[in-house]
Amino acid sequence: MYIRKAKTNELNQIMEVYHSCVKGMIDLGIDQWDESYPNREVIEKDLEIGDYYVGIINDEIVSGIKIDTKQDPTYLTIDWQDKTNNFMVVHRLCAKTSVWSKGVGKQMMEFAENLALENKHISMRLDTYINNPKAIAFYKRLGYKQLGHINLKPNKDIYYCFEKSLTLQEPFS
Image (cartoon, rainbow, N blue to C red; front, side, top):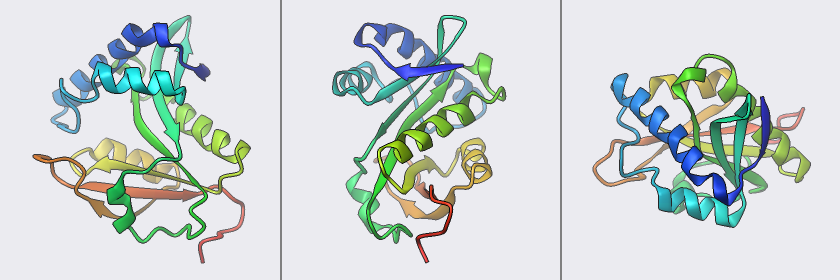
């Protein structure tokens, strides 16, 4: 898989990835996302900002991820291990259902972690919905530590917050 910064003219293809992912999640009883989020406006803004990346297999966009240094204000309630606040945040990781369980998500996360290291960040942060056991298990397999929870959206349950040190030594002790 080839991963690169997304282009603004790829919005429709990226939305196809989200539609596939959301349908797959709903089919599994995971109500983290729906037809209202992530929406075109949110992804369009990501593309304009320039911090959205796509995974491509055989000239087809099959996954997407937003990577930046902006955390939701609710993250301030979490006792993060990285006290330096030298982190990057993953948002809206998705993949077409046709590539689920084929290592695409892992490759996207490895890309995010490498991008963070290249930019001299020492940790990654993210959140995922309490009712998304596949994502929770996925992030734990990748070495992310669950540190607490937040109330991110009205009419939704809590979201777990995760963090991973990207340095060889644990700088968080």
